[in-house]
Amino acid sequence: MDMGQDDEEVYVQIVTAGGKVADCLQAFRTFLGPCDMLYEVDG
Image (cartoon, rainbow, N blue to C red; front, side, top):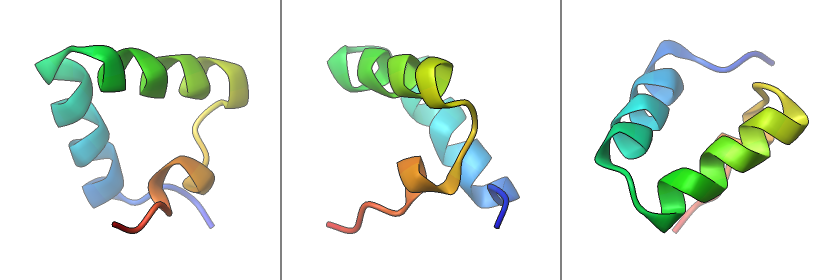
């Protein structure tokens, strides 16, 4: 399953906002590449 458009939009919003969470997501995405695992975390 590929990352959906909504997932990508949320990722961009978080990264654009900056901060430690954005840094962490960017690091994971750099290491793993784009993958659904980064977007399957439910609160």
